[in-house]
Length: 359
Image (cartoon, rainbow, N blue to C red):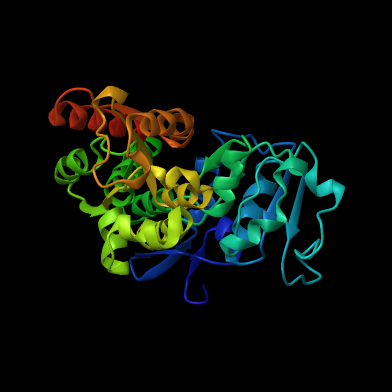
């Protein structure tokens, strides 16, 4: 900022610039985070007259605080792990006071490491909406907990990242975009479609590997078969793992490989024999950087046996389908029928992904 001839008042309020434009040898400083934050937040929750709770006192805290006050917030409260007199109103290791958990709290952005969201007890918070400026992973623990509790999610960090870049481009080009909000939406959707994983869940022999390989090629993503990765890492076949360690031993290895690959991006994950949904931690990991599609194949078309210890008979397969179907439906972002050809299933999956990424 010290090298700028002119500093936008909003950047002064924040105490930082992130966009510098050279105009005839003079440097003009702006902060496009200030513009990006309300663009992403206000469609879900109006800040005016509400209480805003900010988690963390890092650089984003200043931006959020300035935006909240300028948009008419009644109160701006802060929670920090390392409280200092000017900013922090409550250390994170203590429970939130009642004033911090009122029903008027609409917008708590997380400006802290993801694990710090343990401070937020959704059952007590009754938040109106939540915003997280972190963009990697796509859905942080804070966002996942909000979704589970039915709290509206304003946006994840990727949209804000795109928004501040679009507004920076307006400064660099010295012109306004005709439809900046539309541009932000289109770019964010394209990035998510390119970067995020697609995970296929469903019963054993429902076609996750066959459809998955074809869908991965269509999407330009790397195909990963989690069962193959378990065998590769352990050095034993799946029946041998079950024989030696039982289902619990196998599930632990499955969870380890799920956590490993879910951190990456641009992959198509075929989720093995379908029991991955039995552990909530697996679904949480898959949802952080991806979308889940339930490949729904009719029971009478499923294969008995096929090297899967838990589907060794027709009766076992029926019992498994009864137990797991509600879990598949609850976990999936979309249901993909697979009662026809592979091409039919791939087409249905592409249409579902178009719908998911357009919102």
